[in-house]
Amino acid sequence: MNCHIKTGLAATALSFVCCASYAADDAKIVKIGSAAPTTGAIANLGKENENGARLAVEDVNRQGLVVGGKRVKLELDAMDDQADPRQGTQVAQRLVDDGVVAVVGHLNSGVSIAASRIYHDAQVLQVSPDSTNPQFTQQGFNTTYRLVATDAQQSPVLAHYALQTLKAKKVAIVDDSTAYGQGLADQFSEAIKGGGAQVVAREATNDKAIDFKGLITKIKGQSPDVIFYGGMDATAGPFIKQAAQLGLKAKVLGGDGTCSDEVASLAGPAVDNLVCSIAGLPLSRMRAGPAFEKAYEKRFGTSVQIYAPYAYDSVMVIVDAMKRSGSTDRAKVLAAARSTDYQGLIGGIEFDDKGDVKSPRLTLYGYKNGKKTLLTTMTP
Image 1: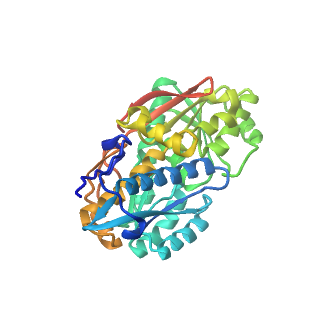
Image 2 (image 1 turned 120 degrees about the vertical axis):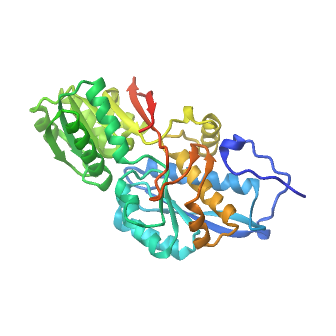
Image 3 (image 1 turned 135 degrees about the vertical axis):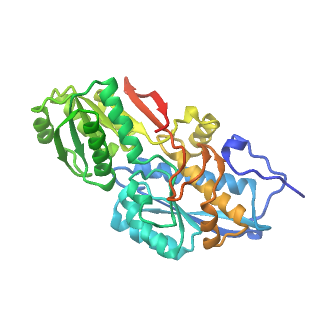
């Protein structure tokens, strides 16, 4: 029996109907790796990456996948990198040794960068749904791809908001000393200075910190109009809360790592003082966003926070490369990735010669009564 299969949630809006079903023992098992921090302080974000990839794998298997005339069943090989570069390289090697055809990951830029050499040496396609440090795709590796805007695109948008909307003249900058946080802060510093504002404080903490009172007191003495925080929600939340407790009224700006539901629970009412960016589109602006949200919540019993759609489409990009190459061979799938022209959940996906997605989108959010509220969407 013939069956016309379309991969991609945007095309089917999760209403998958196939006229043939394939038994598991009748199909070749092909592993796709998933690497993200599923334990620790930012496990909420890492688990979302894994969930997004898992939902895609399940959807593809439900439809039935044929590659080069052979039936294929996908299997997600999910591993916890603990948001640690050293652990990330070990996870990368295990995934390579497991024979994965490609990898969705990692979440943290520092981990993606560290692990990328392992994937490159093995010539395994790596698609990150959320690593934003520009260095990730600037290493000359033919294996590195990402589906989101970079910090070099994200930070100037935040700086423009600080300058034009908040009319900031004096700015304090804090980062968590990670490749992600420091890279984002460096790009913001360059952009804000270029716009004529003064950086009155540049401070560093770490990604395990919970007490910021000394640092905040030091910053308060400089009377900044705006504070930029480069880091993740696990530390941004306490920072924002303690800044409010110490009477610091400056608006806090942050990147995508801060822009979650979790930051609201950690910061309390003070989260209304945060404006943050997402290096992509909101679900509400995606063609099949509402359908994806319902399917995700039904499957996992929790709401989409940030990048589940990007993890979903990372799998779909890999599947698209398999289908176009007519193979599940690593080398052939990798070779096909460069010519990707795929209409996914997040929109059209094409890559430049470094592996960065063409025409990325950015979204700014504020918080009102503890709820994330869309401010604006733009192309950097």
